[in-house]
Length: 124
Figure (spheres, rainbow, N blue to C red):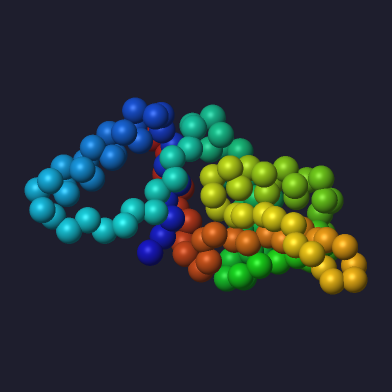
């Protein structure tokens, strides 16, 4: 199974939902579609090389401490936070703070794609 990231408008999303509804009405078996709809202008931001490296770094991991991510990626916390914010917007990662007994709190990053392939599709 893979995650498809498609560029398109809100009407494209509803057209896709209507197709699925028709399949259900016809009694066809509907398989889960892991599709994330992205505004075409933002799709280019998702395709930046550093974000691809971040996704590859996170692939297959259940969770990563943010400080380990900064060290492992050899990037600044500010740049990683910007990338994680965009990936979080499209539900590719989840970030939260967790107590670290005796040491305060730390930020944790959970990839939501596991080992799944992420496929980008753009139509112009």
